Image 1: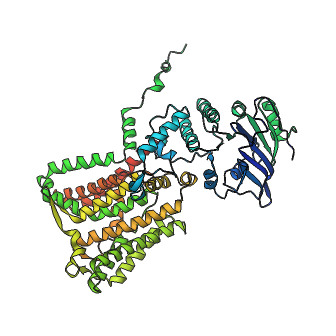
Image 2 (image 1 turned 60 degrees about the vertical axis):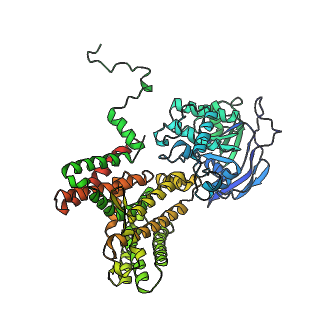
Image 3 (image 1 turned 120 degrees about the vertical axis):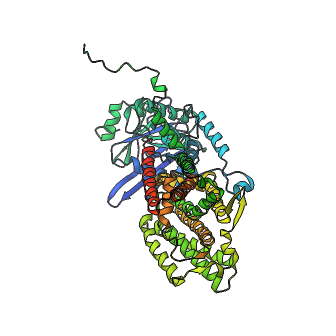
Length: 266
Length: 343
């Protein structure tokens, strides 16, 4: 399958090895074809947006990349190595962190506990191995540092429960958790869907910070202005395939929508 | 121009100020510290009952209150763990009774050493908890239904196994009734059973607040899906909670034998609801994920103080039941109101 690989100044050089690459992914659910041979490349230090109409296969594609679904055919390469994810934990262990639309935070736990939920750090020595004592002070300190690194200065008290935060702040906690553990790729599913204008702006700023720190980001969004504001490249998904890969400079929003709906061919 | 004035223009800095009313602020504080409201209620009730009757604050009476609270207080530790996972356990009293009958019969009848009998009782409690856990995880039964069933099963087993007969303390080795002996602590006689109860609270509080397991218990009760996506195995956490609860119930069985100086298949089966009462008054939410065992201890003490204080005031036992019922309704209403803080 040949696609329009538009090369424009500022886009990553095609010579670079993709951090994450999918080739010919096929996923069917009975007679329903979710993915029909999808290719995808994510290059170092870029924000790749995935757009597409409902049913185009965006979610299925992301689920295959993050281990929530196992593709029937095709291969996924992380840093050039072939990987097989059977569970979301496998993908996470390999360095692919996902921020789900539901955020997957425990509202009554504090920020630090949420950042470390499922990977708590124990105290060294017998305190940790026998008494299972967690390193609460260490985790809180590290949590503050992670938040500061991402420029989230409004969340310095990491002991407040997440439920007392605004929607944007919760999103920031979820993104910080994804970014905090030396991840190779961060996947954001509709990160601005439930947010107001100002909070959306803060989350987009967070995505930029993440990219500037060298972490490549895949972002799924229905919001065209957000996509065109943040993305370096845009993967257009249509009918279970990649219709095109464009950039905000090569195409206008109207042209992108035309590609999405099939009104135009790449 | 309209004569009716509209709202004055908002101060641009206003949104940075805390504009909540004092009531809303109080709610925020109570929301953050779930054990605070039961602590206030306990202090107030001790003061009021102390003023009503000078005998209430006598060391002997305070000692009695703690001993009256010891068994239900221990059951309530197990109940707290389960309610934190958004479950409920209607079988706690029957598990305790079954375990106490096993311990008493094994030690008194067949010449098994007392320590070994206690271990067999522990195994009984853990097995009962494990059965509840399997029904909730493998069969995905709602905890209410699963434990309603096992409540009847364990009650019947205790009666069948003991042939309905009470084992008297005198027929048991001294180790089994040791939990009923008292030690003077600064003028107040504290029973070893009460100390074992406090030990259960200390261990549970440590496990819940300072270990990863504890965080996972809260996360599972708070939002199962979020916990799962965070890589936590829901079923493993639930099974471990029911097993731990079973072990605590076996401890309660030992404390009950010492307190009653007997093991009876008919006493304690009805303590299920008392344990839930203590947990709820202690500020733990029946929706899971919120609460502490210290709140439960305060809740158990509040119930003990009310029952004791009302009986010292010369009121019929029916009024104690009435008062406890009102306490539960007030506590749950308060919990609902506090939870509205959630945005």
